[in-house]
Image (tube, rainbow, N blue to C red; front, side):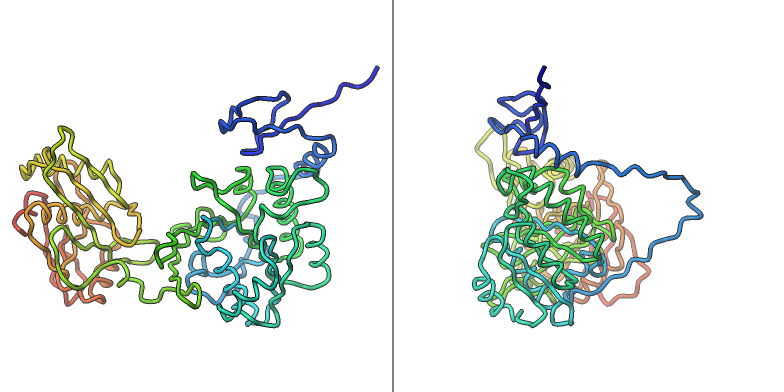
Length: 449
């Protein structure tokens, strides 16, 4: 009697596996995304997920020796800041971003800088030829003898190249274009991406090579491929920005070797991506003061940024006025508007209110509450606020204005940018040239206009 065949189907969108074919994936909701895995593919999956049987014994944590993390610089201050101080040998880093944002440009620039510091770097591209990469390298001034280019999409050929030279850094552009001959599925499929990432992770740990892989993102903003991809790597970075704007931001969403609160800010120029040195002036305008504009200072990791909060209050003809916020939490805006109606008697229930944070920054903290209120009142009364004033404070539901963390760093940055007045919740002990005005209730804000 013949042995019954073990059937296994896998969703090509999310990697969900089932023993029966499904028209719709119960995990991600994708239609017609299941394919049957062959016997060879199932064997590869078993091997990659197999756990080595070794006898382990638990020991007290007090007896465990701490690993000393050794880093080397990428020679780019912004990139090092996001990574936690530099590149860790043997680490596997995933960088995602929308098409055209500059992922390849950023890593080619980093590769050139590392190669200039006498470290061998291999740049593997499955999307462009060596000649195309050479053209970009000329523009980025990334031509160095220690930077090697390889246009290849077969994993086995890439591994052979690694055995011929002792590379210290490897760039894979991109993970969705590389395939392994052990699997019959096409490049970019869930099985291929998972297998390739597993092999790269094993290679990084065995040879102590720092590997960076570029990943495409889906329409909802997540990295394409199985979710396990982000769990396997040591660091996950997202490169953000609009192609119509010059500024780009690099954020860490996972980092086993450092903090995820830091951001790197770059500027796209004719010479490629450059570290934004004097970035503060990019987010606000020091010239003409207009109604509906107020300045605040937010913290992005250890960096203090001065941002311009813009508000527009206009008479509404609809029974349900519009409330819209870009770069600011919409539910928090609704709360602040209700507070202004109750505490200051502003008839905002008959006005449309729009709030925008300049520069494309998304504010995730509550320190900008006071600036949002100031901008709304300024627009409602059509009275401009001086560009030499900033507003820092969190507003509670009771109308109380609370102090925020790192107020000293915020005020120092404001003073460095020529700000002369600061409206805050509590008096600071820091001796500064700018004048501070303490406001502890929202009802007292009206006295400033």
